[in-house]
Structures are given as C-alpha cells and as structure tokens.
Length: 225
Image (spheres, rainbow, N blue to C red):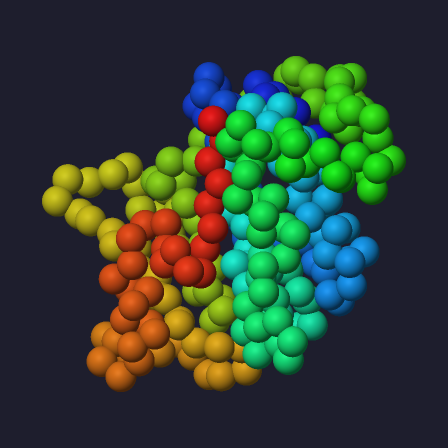
C-alpha cells in the first residue's frame, strides 16, 4: 500500500519525482526466549526483508533494537538478549544470525527456515501483484507549500499574519525558524537548555557528536542494493 501510494501522480515531489521511503526503527518482538518465539521473530524479519526487496520506493530499513532493553515496555525486539539475562547475557538470537546474512550470497539459505513458519512454499506468495484500489491517477492537484504560504497558530491563540496583512515578500526582511531538541526522558520536564546539558551529560554529548547515521551500537541500518 505504501509503495503504491508513493507512485501516485499526486504524491510525486513537484509532480515528477517519486519520494523515497525509509523504514526507521523497525523491530520484531520475541515475547520470551523460547525456541518458538525466537524463530518467529527471525521469520518476521525474513518476511519483511523479502517483501521490501520488491518495493522500489523503500530504500532502507533501520532495525531497532540491537539488544533487548528493559526500558522498551516488556518488548524483546533486539537482535541480542538482555545484557543482564541470567543465563545468556547479550546472547545472539536467531534473528542476529539472519540479519548478518541479509544482502549477502547467504541470504536465501538463511531465510529458508522461515517458509514453513509462514506457511509458504516460495517467496512470491507474499508479494502483492494486483493494482491497489484507490491509488490510480486522479484529478487531484497538489497544494503550493512554499514557505511564503505557511500559517500557524500557537497555544496562546496568536496567529502569524497572512498575505492579506503582510503583503508580498520584501527585500531585506528575513524570518528565522526555531526549534529545540529536548534530550529529556518520558515523565521528566522539558525543554532543556541543550548547551548546559552537553556540559553535564556525557551520553547527550556522544549523540551530539555522532555521525549522521547515529552511533553504530544503537542503530542498525540496512540499505537495499
């Protein structure tokens, strides 16, 4: 559905370029560490991977999380077990070994185990090949979304002036767009002064200095070839 949506004339960037889709923070849960749960988790990744390979609008999938985290509300979506697991701390799950082989010559063999779990004989059975209803071309025309048409109202009911009040763009006049990063946890007050937080919180400082794709221990990015 998402892939078909991006190919509609009305969703093309400026009417001609298909938009790219990045699936960020995707993960599959293993309710526990039983063999069935771990195999089901790995099979879910195999299913998703084989599915998106045929969807050319999806250019990357970012897997979350690299290790099970007690702060994820009971989910076990990591490629590894809890670091404090009593019997196998940081243990590699079946999904870890599968993830390692995706996009390599060993991919098909590594995904083979998932077919009986998914109830299929071949991967073509999971592909949708018929037209998606409602995504055909229509008479829709995209709105003009350049910044000189933006309007906004804040929590106090104050509204930005419109063209009727402000008139056409004027030379020598500039408007700054401001945003803040909170770097706070759920339940804690924010926003915070980031410049001060960087001085006292090494964790935040590490993130601030990280490369664009983030710290490798925290984020796993799979790029489709």
